[in-house]
Image (cartoon, rainbow, N blue to C red; front, side, top):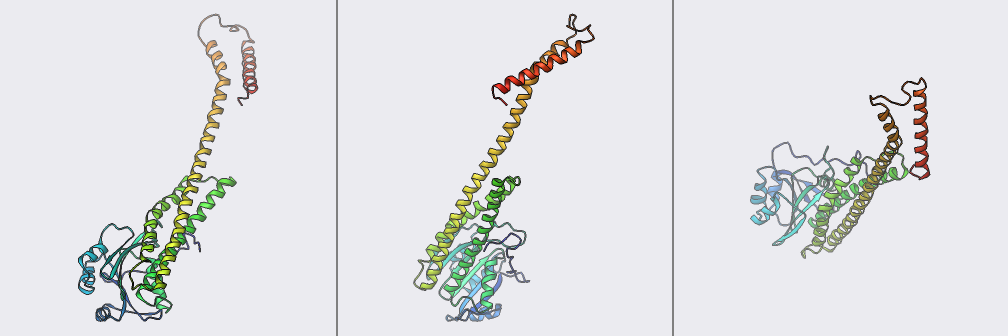
Length: 339
């Protein structure tokens, strides 16, 4: 459902008070719930191959290598893929695990909606490690579902929940942009108010960024849906559905870009038309006063022999001549349909 900019959610996925990469960890119970783990409990359970564990990290902190290298014992290639500075949505297989990078809407206070947040993911049949630089609201939503007992039942299911939440939030922003663009179009067609080009720019700018990242993200989800054998069919169906939903949003982005371009062209056309009308009126006025200016300039020279200079009725006669001449010029312009 569409939401206004004031009613969109803000993230509660705040980092812990200590300066640590550890944000949160869960052990899934297999029925939709999970147990929130502290750091010590996580280390105690990590070597238990039967435990389905989710570890969420903030990789801005130096001790992130303690979790990725020492605890999870990931290969250097995997760690490098997870910690690379500039990311785009991607999927890569390393052994039995999958590395993927996704993008989510930034709901942090004061943030622009097109300032997308990357979520780096390492997934195996029993382990899910996610890394972020800034709090991501989609993670908070998934955590709330686990806390309520209505969340993921397995690690693949948890990955599907995350991607579905990310896509749903893209949909919220899509509907918000579409509604705002429709308001500008109605204002333009109804001529009830002047459409500010800055308002149009505030719509077109996030569309550019969303199109840039959501296209590759759709391809990532489609590729994940054809993932390894340990992904169950229900998870693959969910990933395919998320990819399909994201495809529709991308089509909406393309359509909104076209609509915004048409609206921009209409604004330019109206602006040019108003400017041309004003220039035309100035040209008409100049044409009318051109012969009058010639007469006043001619009679204003300081030489002898100016007609009517000694007559008490000279000024009145001159005014009469200028009025007749002005009316004659306006009549001529009217006859030729110049105004």
